[in-house]
Amino acid sequence: MSHADAFDTLAAWRPPEPRQPRFGVANDWADAPVETAAPDKSMVDWKWGDPISPNAIAIGGALFFALLGALFGNALQL
Picture (cartoon, rainbow, N blue to C red):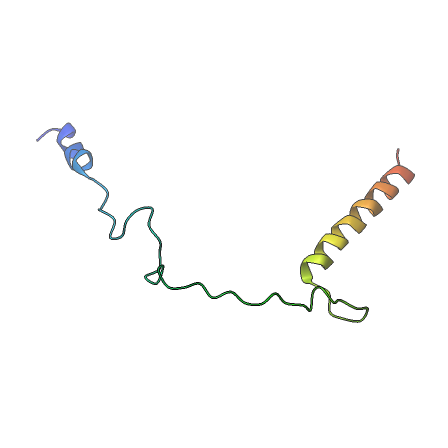
């Protein structure tokens, strides 16, 4: 037995066959009719005092601190 024989097992290895079609759908109910929900009117009819989306808070905070950094950077330039 030589050192090259140790690589025969690696060379003969093949990945296992997929159990489902590779590019098929992941669920079994793909042919079922799609149920669509009515659009949520709470985001359309937003009023002051209503809760704000966490995404809006994050984007607004990022813009605020970018502006604040630009102002302080300009004011404190060395």
